Image (tube, helix red, strand yellow):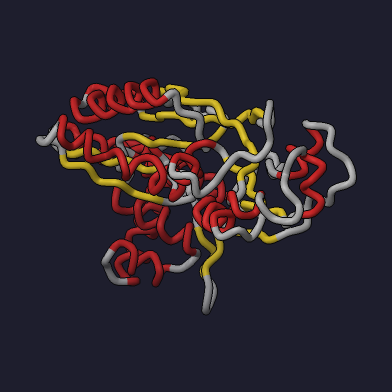
Length: 311
């Protein structure tokens, strides 16, 4: 079989890719906004050009043949690559819009309170912020930059480490003035431990009380007991209300520590270092856009000025 790409119908390849992914001519037709008959016709034309059958057609279903299974990964990758290129091309001339993605914690606790200063410095730039716990594929070209909490493993991206992360205990001053004040880590046995279940290493290890107690050599305290929350804001609020002792990083509770609603009860070194950090991440080609370069410069400057230690 001697088939050249230039002789293959693009519509047929698109129809095959959609039908193969869905294993349905009807679903493929809905995705491509054509009729199922058109999908069938385009695929038959492609099969005729290739000289092989790509699908086994049955009464109520279609299945890929060996040839279809061989072709599918490559067509899917090719169309994804083309779509990324078109997305980047579409954004090349957009010099006044900046799209940033970040986690809910970083977005609410760090970015949003400070974003006004960037907008005052660059009123010509329209900023769009997307907040999600899911990592956005920056290579797709829909997003210019990200503020990420992680280990800095982002292949193919421009990466700037903004801070390292330390965890330390905090509690309400009222809790510390009660029957069992916190003078040393062993005193935690009298108190409820507050857990942030959104903290997870890529390996599945959860940085929290167990890690903190082992690092400081504290025995006899059940690290898993206490109240569990999905996210830093809830953990911090519970600590402010006196529900227990929370393990936080600086940005999680910076305002509450500054205004005295929370305190660090232990004197001396009560912090543990994590492998995690906060990173500015961007596709290298995006840094050629003035809004992205301006935002990166502002982020680096702001973190450096605050000597930030964060989640």
